Image (tube, rainbow, N blue to C red; front, side, top):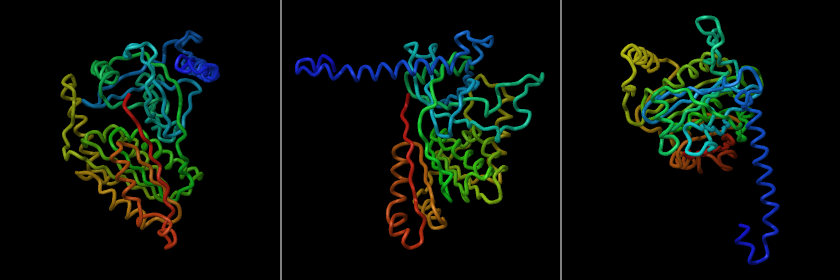
Length: 346
């Protein structure tokens, strides 16, 4: 920009922009050091924030790391991950939604201790958990690392984003496709928690997830089951899973032994017959689902969607006139607010 504007004597206006950019870089660098100070030898626990990688299936990788001290986030926020051993450049930063929740409510007693009584990093609320959709470039290299179950060094920069506060809505509908569940799951859990502690008057929450394979449900089944059991009587919970390919086979790596496969298949069957879960094959009929929810809602209603652009367009079409709008409100219908969380591929 400096050289492009030099011919018209406008270069002087570029310097203020450069100063603002440089200030932002400096602030982010300081924030990065503070959030990851264990890596820099400031304490005796240096290096204890390494991340574990797990290949969930051919298209998804899960990254887990111990929550850095004083790192707190809101449901629906994201963070930048810097993985020097995976990235082409040492300090490439890639944004991913945080799929875990910063709360101990959904922490099972005893989960944070290992067999020898020591504290474990397996406590869901004490971890930062990311589910990464494998594409090309960085995510493809991350998949190769996860296939070997390697532990890698990760720097965390965040959290970022300003997710909406759904506490003031009487009905909340959460729609996700694929890895969009990393946004809707923590929001869903936070609604249950808010109703329990009295900070929200929400009366109904609907969790909808369209996924390619039913085995993917195992990634979040514990959290969904826990949320369903903790939901107070005043909150109606509806969990609907749509399997778009109609299959139920588990996708496992060749390195997994037979006992692990049988254990996951048994857990998979238990999930499919859970009374709190509604599972169907095929794509969700969002037009019919949202029309039914709008017709039965009273007061304020929110619809949050995270997924592909096609999914967002389908939700928009389903909510257009006459399903919702000023005329619907005049006839006693709810006031509907749509939130669209878009994402790209790192």
